[in-house]
Length: 75
Image (tube, rainbow, N blue to C red; front, side):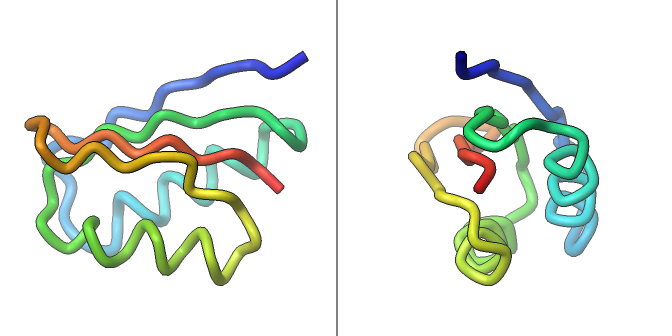
C-alpha cells in the first residue's frame, strides 16, 4: 500500500528544500509518495536533479502553483 506524505519547504532557500526532502524520504518505505511544497526558484532545477541522483522517481512537478508542488516516489 502506498502512503502519501507532505513536506512543507516553503520559505526555505537552496539547498534546504532538497536536504529536508532527503531526510524525510529516509524515514519512508519504498514506493511511498512525498509531496514537497517549495517556493525556492532553485527547486525547479534541484528537485529533478536530486531525484535522478538518489534514484527516486519524480512523479510530477506543478510549477504553476505558488508554492510549487513536487511528487516524489521513494525508490
